Image 1 (cartoon, rainbow, N blue to C red):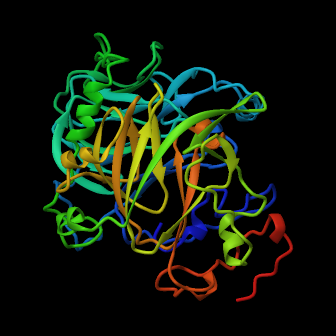
Image 2 (image 1 turned 90 degrees about the horizontal axis):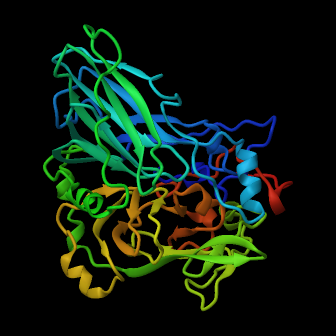
Length: 453
């Protein structure tokens, strides 16, 4: 969302839309193409649905780096809980954890309820997003290969996969060739890293098929072997020779030659607070103030600046000050035995490295500084690290968070305040940041504040 964190829709940029209120989002998508999705960001409401796909297409003057498919389909996969989202939240509020999911949905439907029609000989584009709360999923189609072409706004080196590991919040775009006319086939999204055999099932239907698919499901990967997933993640690379949002090739941006302004090592953790589990980043579990940080910044209220690290876990409002157009090197260190997924609003970043163990500077020698994939959501494997590079060229206050809904709700997040040398946010040029919207909702200490342009 270029130049406009006012429209980001998270708790520290927007006041909640209360019952009886409405809010119209207004934003530009001119700086990015690709496959994305929207969802409600507060209080585990995502568990009740309310999500959907977003497609941002190339301008007509910029060629797509593959033959235009016959049709496109959005495929939204995710875990499902029979419990009401308010009950799930209440359990977390008293120290519980999310239960195991009750099922896996494909486009909001149960087993065999989603049917996608294929015509033999044609090529289809599937835009696949994991819209669930916390479950990594393996996606595959019986007797069909998938040609990966795009990841979260970046065109990829085109490679075939028989299955894709798609972690919470991630989006992939694949081409599938309809190669038969004799049967129907299973489309499967199954749980990873769990002993549960849960799977979402949809149907690929050909016109001459005489019934449901036959034969066993295509096998899922070993549930507890992370290494093939790590290799797959490393194999996904940026296509340097094609344009995306702009006519110039993606590879004309030489991220590997830019000097690093600052290195952050962000380690996720767990703490106990009044017999309630919370999650931390560098020892701080995020607590939301009554007034969103974006509004407080604009109206010159003091924003607490919690230290980046703490010797003992604590509650706080973590904000990292970041000069506009700095180039940050961020390492996500995961000391836990569960996979983490991180998302940065307002940016794509380059995933230059990931491996097992504890990161140190010598790891930089093995970074991919040429064609690392550019995306906005990345996984960190258990007892492992992932390194990213990001150009902070998007003014505003931006959320960096766990995409695991339980961890996000219980404090595993922080904010980047990307700013220039202006004395007041009101002095920022509209070239760098859009003005405060006329329909901004007020809350907290600014509930009765009048907006004067």
